[in-house]
Length: 401
Image 1 (tube, rainbow, N blue to C red):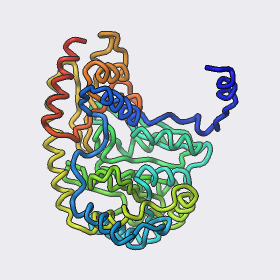
Image 2 (cartoon, helix red, strand yellow):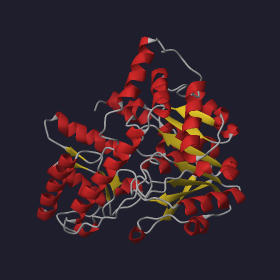
Image 3 (spheres, rainbow, N blue to C red):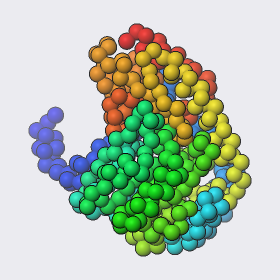
Image 4 (cartoon, rainbow, N blue to C red):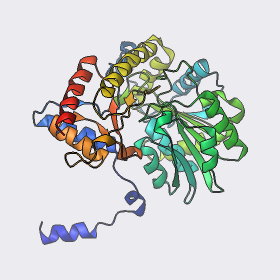
């Protein structure tokens, strides 16, 4: 490095807020897996958190039609009236909610909606209750806003369940927000409708906000699909964040949404107007087709995920030393690999995941990114054949560790 380059590097002073956060652990795994593939290495990818299904044809057709019709200009920041009405309608049909257009916003993915909601609700010093394990971005988005995460540790022996009693014990005078994520990424845990309802009721009575991240709400395997949006009497203290990414296999399309009080949605729209503006116009037309079109594709994918879950859980449990809960939603397992520690220089989940990728060429995500050091996240959003290839590599790797 030259002296001029050194001086330039030393002169760069980044903001304190950007230094509070870390890069996404899942995106780091994706990047490393892509790097290995670029070298011609065959990687079995259990790291990516996205459906292996193709986007349904009627959704793709709507996007093509939008292009042909030259629907390629700016739209309203929060989405077209047609899209916002479609979001509200779909949620009302599926969850008996009664939101209005002005209580909805479309964004560039569910993560964007979540980011905006937290930025307009959380101020410096505010406490945010966050169950562990948590999705990688929750903690960093809260920290970027200046908030402090109060981590709520769940019990693996109880399938990482979150209960109202656990949440209540974590509340202090500084609690501003509770984040719920059911079904959960990474554990696949599902809160009971009763516990979710009680948390929302308790929070509303105490003037605390609830954000319910319902990205995987349609991938619930308990037979009790539930959204807090159905709790109409408490709607003034909660934000529902949703996404089309997992429900309709539209991860790359980047379309998410939020439902909540008009004043909060308006603030989110103001922030969005100064960052990304509207979601892509073409994608908005595709989203309308997804929300208003046939929904059998959603159920077909859900049923296939159940088959994949059963297959991968059985396979993981057959690996010596691996402990694995039975996820009740989403498309991840969260096996405990701590029995492997102190073998072959392995001391943490990050070590396990790193060696799995480098030596066995199986991509997983280490639990440290989700708040635990004993687990790795395994995505089963792939084919049975690919699951078997990866499980075979893992069995051989662990046996020789």
